[in-house]
Image 1 (cartoon, rainbow, N blue to C red):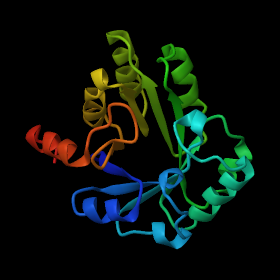
Image 2 (cartoon, one colour):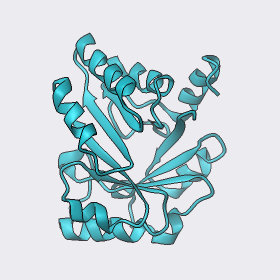
Image 3 (cartoon, one colour):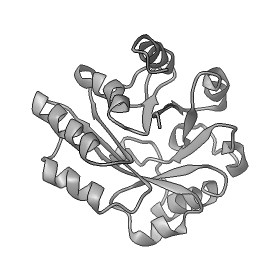
Image 4 (spheres, rainbow, N blue to C red):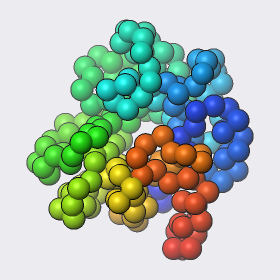
Amino acid sequence: MKGKVIASVKNFSEVSKVLRVVDGVEFRIDLFRKLPEPKSVKIEKISIVTIRKPEDGGKFIGREEERVNLLENYSKFCDYVDLEHYLADEVFEKMSCKVIESYHNFNETPDYDFLKGIVENRRGDVVKIATFGRSKKDVEKIVKLLCDYENVVAFLMGEEFSFTRIFSLFLGSPFIYCGVGEGVAPGQYDVFKAVKILKELGYR
């Protein structure tokens, strides 16, 4: 099954802008000016809900209990919620939909055995590995993860390694995350540019 193009959005006007060209939407609830109603994240395409804290690259500054409760409420209306890999098992068990278990490292790409451990000890239906790239060795780690395991989203952050987001789809990644205009993460493609590249490569 081909991987899906997902647009990370910060408001509903962005949803309207991209819905015709994407396979799904990641609602970055932490970037919305006002918390949307849980029912509003139910759309006709794939719906992912993410609420990031500042230390994980987001802007949610409330209590952790509040964040988990929000995720639980949204999980009743979306297809996936994104949960950080360090969260306890009971948080995963509270969700009413599928889970993307995510690991982000904005400084480096750890060694392969560390990343492999996250994948093999997964609680989520999908594992997302997003690390900062510094060398071709880091690219090799990401390629190996994608080749060795199923249901793994893996790519390198940073402008120099943005290409890893594209090729991850060819190596089995279930999703590629794109921005709307300016991306919400380092090296993230604008969704319209990503779709154009994928069409030129014969992927779509």
